[in-house]
Image 1 (cartoon, rainbow, N blue to C red):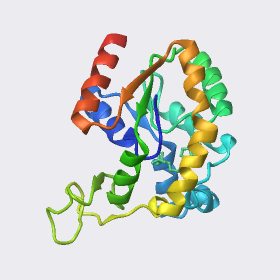
Image 2: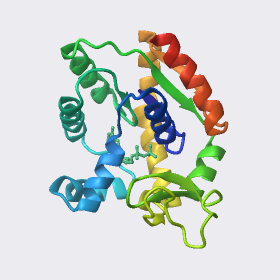
Image 3: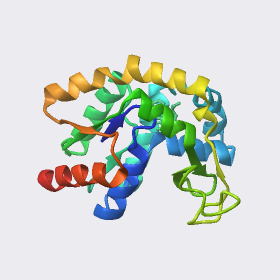
Length: 212
Ligand code: ADP
């Protein structure tokens, strides 16, 4: 699992892990954004919470994860942005026990507030496929379009400065305590997430190879 503050690079690293190791990834945040864009009941029900930087109820998130696991089986997976609360971590423990799968790694991406502020302020995301990039790397076109699917690159509505503040409060209050819990279980590995994506991925790859 990948844990860390908003903007710590979880989504970017999850995508690199999938591409390099072929391990499927699930991200409740990405699922909820897609549901919202599709206008499904789940998307509409949770849009107000995500838009304001709150956390969606543990029940809904755990159901999403269980559905995803049913579809993707149990030959290894990466969680990006799950669990985010102690009750979610407890549910995950039961889910993994049922799948007879141990938790190999809880990777914590450490980032400074400065890094988070800079990354979120310049983050662009494709409305079509979810590809994430930044304002500075998106200068390849006069109009910001996705290099993969030609979809429009836009700012996420929860990346506004006021909303980010709330997301960070939620992270500090509800997600930070997970570090201690995974430290105790021996699964936690901290990585300096302030570096460029390749440097961070180098460390993550080594951890995955050692755990294999
Ligand atoms: P980030 O890590 O950049 O904050 P995500 O894309 O992972 O963003 O999540 C976006 C939003 O989706 C969160 O702010 C929250 O509202 C909701 N969300 C995602 N994962 C969870 C979770 N495990 N529990 C509760 N809410 C979640």
